[in-house]
Length: 230
Image (cartoon, rainbow, N blue to C red; front, top):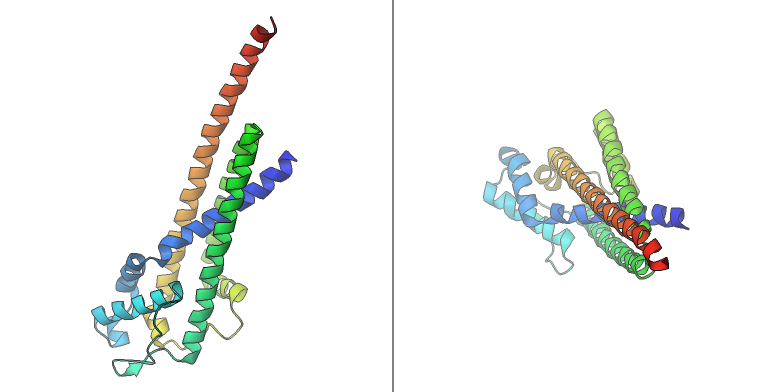
């Protein structure tokens, strides 16, 4: 029972960390900084302030179901056609789904934690935390190796998990690609990986703390046992 609990909750913790780590990547400040760094103003043919505005429109569109639609033309050049809007709607659905799963996992972990504490099975907690931390590291290492070996293949595989073939590929001169070039996504992936590692580190530190506390409780109980029986 303990082994199964450790595996399930450890996996849930790792996926929870992955989900939580995505939140900063959808923040307006993050998008603005990366677009400012990687979007080629001369290639796009728009002033920097306008590029930032367009990027924020796209970010809001995929992040908020109440956001306004995207323009078909932007200052006289092609903007977001039906294919681009359809793909971004798919992205919105994926983000919403990820947040739902993250919330569900958070609730499951909270209920599990409350249950083991109520049952005084404190020895269940640290192993699950350590396994969750190890899984976080494994996810990042596997992703890093795959990305270094062939980032394009990883990018294609990742999109294939969530989007139908042919719905997420656009011409290099489309506004969507020019505002969010490959460097944007590779940097976002690196930041995400760093956040996942940070989350894994927090799990590991928590595991060390909990294990120390449990050991202290067990030692205290062992010392108090003979006295209680005398």
